[in-house]
Image 1 (cartoon, rainbow, N blue to C red):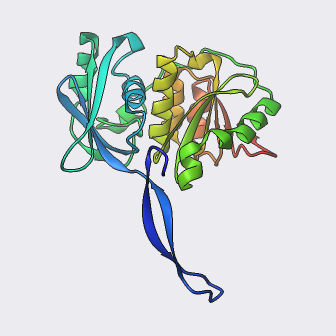
Image 2 (image 1 turned 120 degrees about the vertical axis):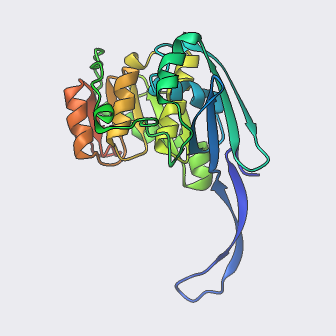
Length: 261
């Protein structure tokens, strides 16, 4: 029986060495359109794995800066729709209505990239408050988190196709993990879960199974995360933006080496 967020499919497996093909069953990660409706307004349609959607809703609203605190998040309700996909209805306190109405639109995107409703280059590169928290994390702690992450990737182990985002204590202990077909979605789910568990991102570092792009740096800065580590390499803009906003950035974090920007 596949784990939550995966479904079984039948395949014909072929071999390069001439062995006869065989019929196999394999679990695939779920990917579905998730329509996000906030205070009755269609805001975005994201391609995501339909698990931990309440965490996703809260993290998404925080990353989009529709709310400045989890206390402004009232509720979220997710349900499948007959046409396929999911409807995620979110209710925010009245204070979130201003930025919501300014940027509201129904659009299709590949993932929660943190740029929904952005119309100009000036808005994309908008100044953000720099990260004020400082966290002492030794390389040994980073290696410890990287080594332990696989044990927390239930959906990843089942499908080999899920990104994971982990909230880690300064000593490398993993406190929370969320998974999704999209790296940005996994990060939003993690931020939402941390807020619901009352775990302060400023007292932790985040480890992502992804390349480090500008949007992920932006999410980390908005959340006040002092250190972001990614399994794959960083982009030029990610390194530049991390440096200009006081975010410590680690990339190519493997079990035996890592790069500190």
